[in-house]
Image 1 (cartoon, rainbow, N blue to C red):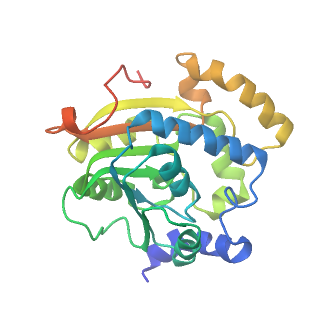
Image 2 (image 1 turned 135 degrees about the vertical axis):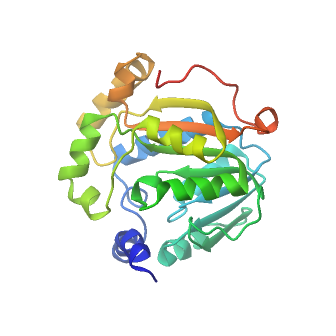
Image 3 (image 1 turned 60 degrees about the vertical axis):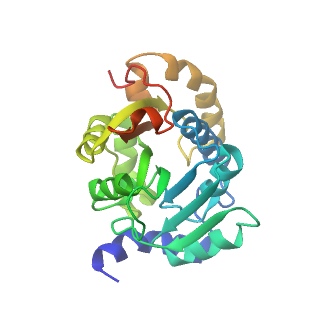
Length: 257
């Protein structure tokens, strides 16, 4: 195992050993549950997964993969993660779903070009040393790439990354939406959808989280405020030569504009 792989995987291997799952999915607080629910809603708004073949990059303990399969109606999902302990837990939760969980690096995907309809990267790039390389590989094996990431324009998010023991231990760093869009374009993709969403942090006292949840719809609908107030940024990009057939939602004005 390389030093890079050790640095990226080690915190999550420790999470699995300590709690049998990730802190924000296993016995998660109310704030994490509602944040994950809102993120899933936005991912399903960003692309049509029904009947599609999906590659889930950085699936972790499988909680969000199972949710995506159950609610999105994918025909099948190939889910990968470099953390072997997480993959073992994910596979144990699969049931009879058409999901294959495998230990694999996002930088070297063992799939042929255009093997999938959609590549789904949810909350994984900000843990990586080479996020642009991961996007390039995803674009190689899928016609549509859906990314959901912490919003790098949010000043509270930047503060949390510096002071939160959890975020520091997991090497988290958020990216500006413009950077994510540029990486997509560098990979030969054209952005078809983007949005800012979610106001509730994963680890937030419940009374505060409930207040933020009530304010969330207003913040998400307010131009400019949503760009700095929302906690996540979602974008869908498709191959430039297959945009009409790729299955992304119709293009609309960018949330970042």
